[in-house]
Length: 398
Image (cartoon, rainbow, N blue to C red; front, side, top):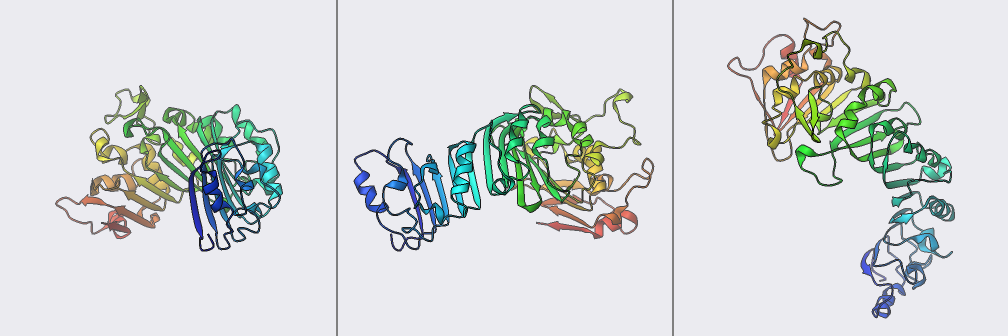
């Protein structure tokens, strides 16, 4: 143990015949130990911190990172090694009273992650305490229940992850302390490992000072239903970078049937359902300061129902293209995507017949195509006009 710098103990027996063997480890000081991972079989029994000198203040003087699974450290003794720790991760359930006491007792801990936090806190967190906390809450939030986070000084929290939410909770949950630059990622949800075409979405919102907000699962229909409200309230007004790998969540031609997202490849016959070209697009209001748009196309399994031309010609996607100055188009992992140059120009260049005061091709500073093949047709690469300017700022990878 005197030579150990990293240790990981899995399924530590609390009450068993092997206690005596394990105590030989805990009773040995570790002067160079800086990272420890402990997984306890049960919360019943003698606390780990009382079992020996390993995790005492003097027994592990260089311990900086401590990860505790199935163990609550709130009963740590006064001479605990937590006095030396700067990064603490706890997966066991912890209430706000315990978290507040822990942060006050061990002021050196500047980064605390609690993997199972109470959904209805009742204690106010001072901003200086909240700035050191990262929380994961297994709970569903809507526009009513999201007020439960208000007393946590949630705008100051370093990182907050909630299991599921409706779009009505986003204005409060994504509250920012200032008007600094923000980033938004719309990704497939990993909550229940669903099929790709039936996946819910996951939202990752990056705020200034490295603060992060994560919604692990959200119904696409709820997200799309609240887009106008989110735009009117300016929730994403400071988003400079938008990364999307669930493009259906933004497409105007998406609709839901039996929980699945589908795309209309043919324009509806009823002219009243087609917005006027002069009508401001919702994306321009939702992301007024957008500078960078990173789009990953859907995998080949969905390419037949959602070809690239349908995506590139969608009114919402075109609005984002015309608004951003840096555009990144990517094929799905381990795949290659085919796009015609004509479709790409239609998507990225403004239509002078229906658009006034629109940005021209020279407004695009950078265009990157990753694992995407471009078919220029018989005419070859462009030589004049806006298409040539677009071609010159385009870089293709792989």
